[in-house]
Image 1 (tube, rainbow, N blue to C red):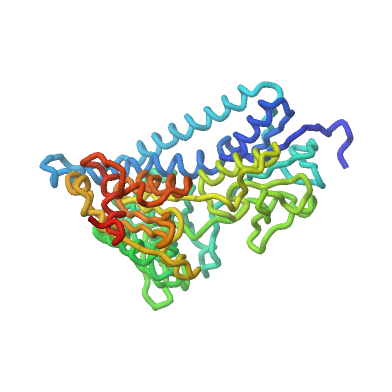
Image 2 (cartoon, rainbow, N blue to C red):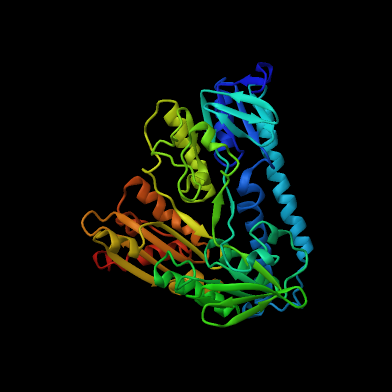
Length: 463
């Protein structure tokens, strides 16, 4: 046991500077509560350092290269398009640093009442966390430690050099042929990105489709766009073995006996929580079988006074979800019980091109849950603005309750789908009916006008 002189007492301890941790710590500090926020790596957590900020910065470069190559379709002639991957990485790093430094300034502005602690925080008992030999105690502790890329138990994987969603963003030499294991959000975004940078790309997914949690027509829409760009898609295939080849390449053997030879391998099959070295047992914090922290609808763990938010809880691993966690938890701790963890609507977007976005129920969800619905769908290419921009790839669909006319869910594959999905999200949040979209006077020509056209395909609203 460390000497008593090594104990520091606070009102609140926050472990992790992710998208829930920082705003929670600064809001507690603004109320005058002595708060410690512990971080073992860079300020900002996954989003700023290894997730949204760097990936979307690089996606922007990839789209620019793609648009430049295809400019002739709009009557614009360009020369050869050359991709400087090193310059792209430098720009990505500069944007990350900008956000990271902004967080540091935000913590500093909180004054002496907020104490940033650099180092690995580990529970050593109930209400007690040790960092660098010093023990910190508080009646309220919030865990926001996030998750990291997972490696599947594929034979031979531990014998080859492979990339994950962090290390691939530091490549300065373009892969000749990138093999991607995993057809989810991360695999799709990086697969298309590096294809647009100029690499040959093969995506292998064990499910029947890319983004296979979505309805089949949604998955097929993005698969069609990928194939048009020359991406090789292998779905419904298990990886039987991975091995090195001559020239420091990699060979992937699939369960159907086929092989794929590549120069680089990206493993993008999910994420695992950062709880292995958290000391959860010492604090009496229960984990599930995958290592995520079990929480109730009010973010309470099995340990009194200890709460968990963000990716480490095993819920939807989105930055906006983690940020919303902080709002809900703060209100709960302040005695304002207006919302809970389950009582919310979570939209999401995959930043491929075209983007894939959804909010609420998919058609598959509604069928499996026995929920009655009316449905309308429409090709994205039927929107006048999409035709004018020559951005016609994609599809749209909406589900409406046949009795109340409220929107049950919507999915969009298309240009700026991540922006358009908020039209549905805000109406669903407000409990409004789909008729609000029908009665809206939409500006022509806009993409949002297409959302109105989609809803008016429902028989009840047809002109």
